[in-house]
Image (cartoon, rainbow, N blue to C red; front, side, top):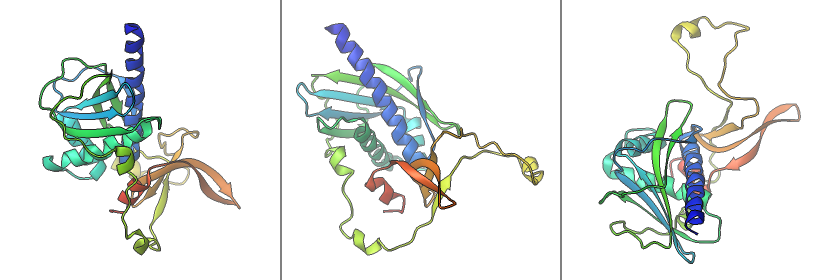
Length: 251
């Protein structure tokens, strides 16, 4: 039985890391891939969620202060003061649990600085993107364990992410710029100056990879390129939550 519980915890940790990588990819516009990594020295931020299932389950993600700040800066597009880092992490954690949950249980999430060290973690994952952005997450999954003290509970992330402004209809007719990103690359000024007809630019993306749909420079969906009546179009295959789409226009 102990071996089965360990195997289940390992699998839960892996799928949680995948969900966290997907959420960060959606919010940051950079495709992050989770790989097993080396443990970090100190865990400064703790992301926790407890399920309503019987027996209850609990999942934890630990981040260093530097990685937490890097996530907040990447999501907001600017340096974030320390007292606002927790709010950004809560947004990320909410999206992660929404992707990770199977709909059979309600998850109550919490995010806070670490008050006491945890002795053991199930696994460590390095979430790395192609643009040099990456963070290390310590992951721990438990079943039937008591809740740790010191974290203030928040409302269910699954419900919180569905909350929309009551006066949304006021802005529904506003036009917003929508763009499709096929890929990107960095070029030296010398290479840029030598561009001419017939030059090839490698965008670092496979033809089979989905393209990003951007509003105000923030990704709101992914899809595949199609031809509609002789014009290019995008068939949407993945959409971020309604709340995240509203955040892309500054709400």
